[in-house]
Length: 260
Image (spheres, rainbow, N blue to C red):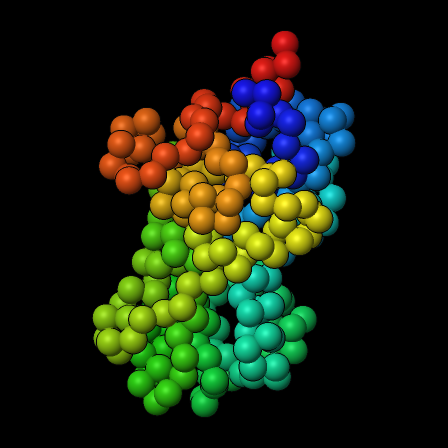
């Protein structure tokens, strides 16, 4: 436990770790107060692409938690950064919400639904047949398929909802093309997070609620790993994977309690 508390950098998932839907999870406020009191460097790193850092800041503020915009990094930002590095000034047909659109605009990427260089898929509540039809035909014409993250579901108040990979699946199936997934567990996003924090991997910990994204991302990037049971994965889930987190906690609220 002391090894965890001594880390300089804390990278935390959001959905299922910090909140469910519009409900702050137990112990989160105490955890953030501990991070601030101990002068830790921390980043809320989320695979969700629908909101911008400003919107995430405002969402937490409505829940009674004041965290600056600089503490958020999303798969939308990671996707925009990746495309900007691969093909500056490229174009994309986008399936997603404004958080993804804004990130792409800011990276100088043009939105094009006729002859784009890429088809980019994130989360959206308006997903439908027309999206699949257009994306399928654009990919068949040569557009490269990019997805913001590999999450197939995500936790919400009262259950779970389909996420990015569920939206990409029919496009992959109808084109025979495999998407490139930018978010966790892709080390690209994790390394950017470490650079933002200014810490080395052995000085940081990844805290998440999913074995298949958060924990494996931490392991493959050389971070200490903590699984919290406040989201998707359970203790029974852990036994199904060939790797394990170093610690399993009920929630992030357990961490400040360790000093008592």
